[in-house]
Amino acid sequence: MKLSKYPSLVQKEILENMTYSDLFLLSFVSKNTKKLIKSSQTTRLRSIGRIVYYNGGTRDGMANISVKPILHHTNRVEKANEFILKMVECKEDAKNNDSFQLNVAGKLIDFGICGRYNCPVASFLSIDKESVIGSIHNYFLDFFGDSIEYYWVVSDYKLFIPRLQNLSVCLSIGNMVDIADRFPSSPVLNHIENSFPMNNPFSPQSKFYQADSLLLILNVKSLLAILEQFQGRQASLTCTNSFDIRGLTEFVNRWKSGEACQKLEYLKVIILPTTEISWTEMLNAIGVKQIDETKTPPTHVLPRVRGWRCFGQKTDPIISHTYVVRETDNHVASISVHREIFSFGVWNKTEEEFLAMMD
Image (cartoon, rainbow, N blue to C red; front, side):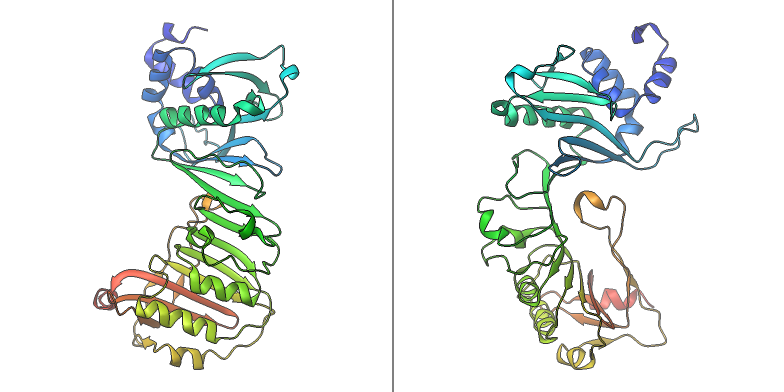
């Protein structure tokens, strides 16, 4: 089938019924074909929210594309997630006879087709790994655009992490025992999460504290270190043993004075096992202010920064009559306490602007 023989409306209809992986392969036919795809599929390409590369775990080597739901005029709903590419490291004598070569951003790369995921497979030797992944990423930037989010998800701290333009790195790992000391040259991570309690805190100099987002299970020692050192935007932390409430008191007072967490937007701390906690002493110690009970407080909610997992999701809403004010810029943070949960949401508003929202 020669696409150029058809009228433009037919061309567009054909392309709209192709998967993203098919469009990706078709773009290599010629410069004109690539230009046609980009011009006729503008709405689809703009709907892409992120591309995620998986290194390790059950999706090892896969590149996944996430899009916002779109209803085409054909009444076909765009899939929310699609595997667009698989990358495989192979041995020199393991070349597939059915493979074909494509020039990807100036580098010839062997490709095949993955039957399981119905997407192209890029294969390479270990020595070429970095350059091949770099070429693929540069092609994605040119074809899909540099305004979408690109994530490299690592499930093991020993695995390869490329240093590429517009690429955020996320660490998703089970046990984080002593991990900070084994990641000496790590880039700043977009997101870190674990599935088992973290017993030892990161060292004070660790770049881990600069991560945009944290989703961690901790013991009290690690939690206190994060409350003291965290420089990112959002954190959801679960403490799995008894906790001295003074740790949260110190955190809030340091935030109020402008000494800590300048970029913080949202913090949620869950203290387990579930116990009734007396919050009154802490609220008094941090000098909270109260909104008039006759007024309905504004709802603090933000898009989640939790890396590749939370496309379109938002933080848990905070609706509270209690708030504190930062001395350095007069900005407000809403505070909600309920049983074992402490929530802290920072507004990009001064106290006067914040209170005016309820007038």
